[in-house]
Length: 574
Image (cartoon, rainbow, N blue to C red; front, side, top):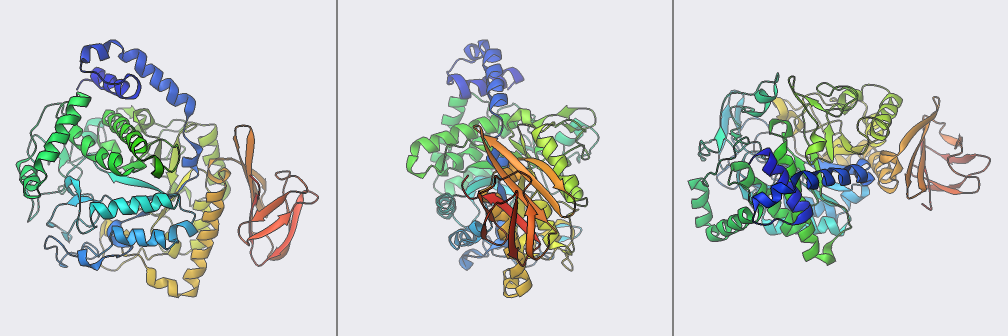
């Protein structure tokens, strides 16, 4: 598909309703696409997404709710350290939703590693054997991997999350398939390449390349029609769903007028679960290694699917929020971090810059936060507030994190300052990602683990028996509840009031009404007086979320006693 036809496809889906004539769509392309851009720029990002708490877990490493699916496809326990399947599954996640674990943390959004069916076998590397426990070695985009559970269990998890006011992001991959293994063949040559290896000095060397020898690269630049792989057709036939899958593909390509190129097959498969189960958004893997135009196609199709699910399931709709998409663009960050030129929101490939927000992304993962967290809170908070409210990132979003599943440079790897880490992350402007176990100080230094396996141990539930771990969890819960209840924490404008104690406020205005909070850190334990600097009027009642007390403002200050040196104030009627 040419860029001209791509723009027409997006316009016809969003604005005019597709018809069978590509020529008639082309005649209106410029007008319709410009109108769409104008609408997006005027609306901006829903502020919810710059205040959201996103809980990210590796599905296989979080909670084992069904031991009967621990080992399927003859997947053995013979891999290198932390590279076997360990039993975590969809049912385990559902159980934790029902237990109220996420709600107590103030979690707004769940993000799990991909649930698609993985290659069945293993891959041997120099460092040892690995199975696809992580979810990124996909064999069949149309099926749930049985090690994770079933499609019915996925549906139940999504609906249970929605019933508890929690949204669900699916982790999606278009960049690559799973590798050839002892039990799986390589996808055909008109679908994938295995070389050259990616380099980092130019656009083409990031996009038309294989990330690793274990990651066959989808030919995402191709617009050529290709046949489905024989192994996939045989698989669907043996599962009794060949005719259904082929009929759905025929309907998709007839409706969209897209070519039967590899990337468009995957777009169809990725959006199916949105249409069927109401998945609220996508976290897009390896976004910078794919031509940016395909992400707008994915966003357009996913938005259409989401709206169709809402129309078909009005009794299950949580709210009127639109489909959300966040991208993983390695080395993208706030305020000139690495490949992000200062004063822009672009990614710099060396010979070309791309603004991913122009291609369907509402937010990008902020790869710079783990580095910025080495600085002071005020440096982080003031810089991020300026960038998100007055700078290059105005109207879009970022998601901050201190640890992730494949970032080799986490903040506080040794977990020496877990309380301070929580304060820096949970009080930062922009959305935040809790990586499973951050709130329990899960060990990030595992003997014998190599590379990214180090960050991927099983959730340390057993540590909850320790008083210090319980106390740390309580700290995260208080911060999470404060953020969850008060939009201004992440989406508001930051203002410092004093250095010692460190006092700041945040303010966010919606429809002429201000949502305001005030935070005081390093204050006196016991009896304390905290000036509110005019943030709350005299006579108003505020809640201290850290001590769970209601307090009345008098003489532009609050006076109360608590055993803590942290104060988190917000009005009780807002």
